[in-house]
Image (cartoon, rainbow, N blue to C red; front, side, top):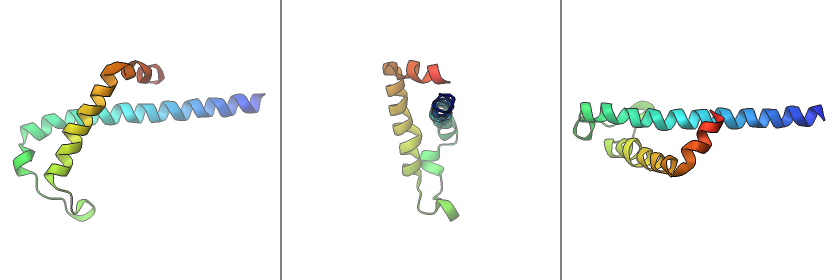
Length: 87
């Protein structure tokens, strides 16, 4: 039985680690909205180079605003409580 308990505990740990990463990612994206607005990246963000080649301001803005806000909306429907239980 100890083996199952250890395996189950490892599963819970993995779920909690991923939950923390999800929580931090959503909050970090929302924080980036302030920088975007302060530096007017909608008008001034240059296209990416190197590993970011092909990424333009509208691609970034869609995630920083639209996707991040959608995720906050999901959290606000009660899922934040679910997430917070595993933090």
